[in-house]
Length: 359
Image (cartoon, rainbow, N blue to C red; front, top):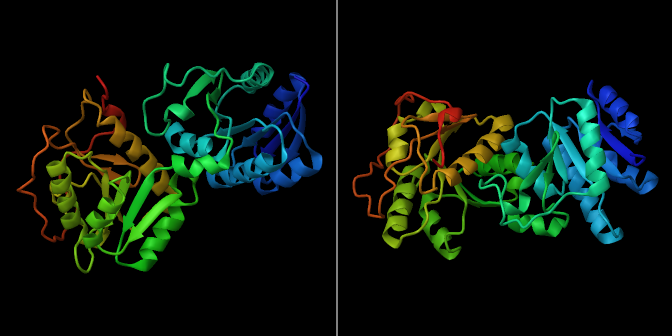
């Protein structure tokens, strides 16, 4: 206790939280707006820790990134930063780590338990074991961003305090759409968050394979519009899957995007080798969390012993198709890549929580 804590945010949770921190001997300073944190630190710091409460993820991560940039140029040490949120772990964790946050706490929790955990964390510091000892094996928390639990705190074992490192840690996303407005909109939606900073765009399906060959197939996710002027999304995906099988390459996850009134049956997309579908108009609020969960799921289902449900499933605004043949690589000679129309139909849906992975 005794350290000065900058508490950032507004809401009903602030009162009990500040009372609990005060009972542990912390001295709290309040700042309502995340955008003002850097100025507050510069004018009234240093602080023993900064605690963000309930603010939106892009606001918090932008504020922390600006703080880390300033600290890397001006300070011999970095301020511990904790983010309290009611969002799910998949949705928040990787963004938090990339922005330089030290720990995350998922509300609700007992304020006294949080204060006790924060006191222990600041007194003893995080325990950083060898990242190979027990890393969390999922996309959203790679070994460098693995966490250790301390009460309600999830503390990053290896916090990413150098903003320059974040760029190379982000997944590479390729967006393919023949409408420039659509490419710009989806890019803008995704780049509000640290996770999706490495985005490339193309305007036709015919450009996909040449682009991937030029990059050595180092792309983590492809988002393809179905209706394009030259080569549509399903044709481009079928070409990609054939090439991957012929050359023994790792499967790149592909998500189709289609206007709802032009939607095809799921079998049209899955038979072409696509892994999921988003319908226009896109829900800006859920696209990010849906794709984060999908990327984690895509890594999980590549595990040798993974088992999956047989129906389609929903991940927010994303419909995910069941895994097709995971046997030896071979050419796919019977995929259907014709254009189609009509309402979505197909297998019964199952919930995300009904999957059993890695058994």
